[in-house]
Image (cartoon, rainbow, N blue to C red; front, side, top):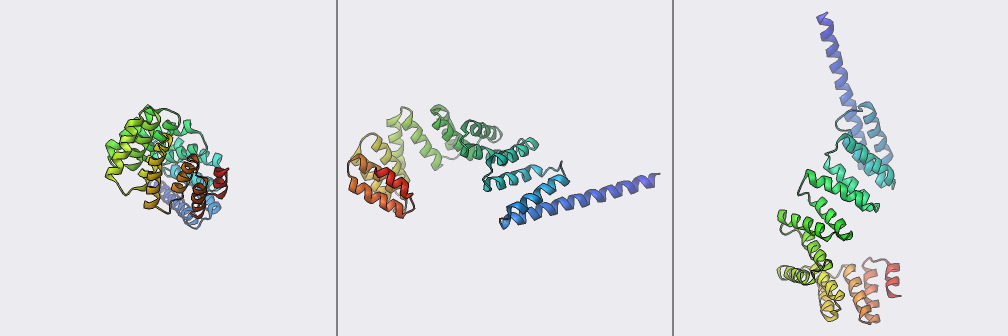
Length: 271
């Protein structure tokens, strides 16, 4: 009897090994299909693998791949279902939760996106992507105190993080701290005098304060430092329009179009 029991477990181990090998082969086939953009084949291989091994620990990652496939197919609702299924299997999978948060944000569901980013931060307190996106969402919802806290957390972890430095300036500018915001952006320019973005940001802040000559100087400096950036020409065009210099505004919009800006948006700007 003992011999039969040993034979049974030997056969069972062989079957499990073959099952594991088949699962791995299907996953590999799916990855190979993804590499050549054969999305339908990749999906079929991943689904076959999950059907073969419904409780496999790797299925949460396969749901993540399926979610990305659905996004590329512009099937966002199905993509959300894939990400959620993966998270049901592996609630602490940070990459899966970041993917779902990003999709929620792109679909306009900021509250759900912020919730997922908060869950990521609970798992990884200094996850920069989650902190930055939650700060951005909070600022857009006028939760400036929360946004400021997120940016400050980022700067404790990475004192030179540009996204956090800029985000903090803009939050302070919008939330009743205009002098502090101007001092901060000017300090950044002192430290990084060749960084075009900082001049463009200060120019925009000066434009909102109707300090047109200072704004023009800063936006022009941004363009001189980074002449291939269409956004800076658009910003200066809006300034020229406020200054009633339509001819100069038109010249900047034409340059922006040559650098890749949407011609219809530029035409609308000049109306």
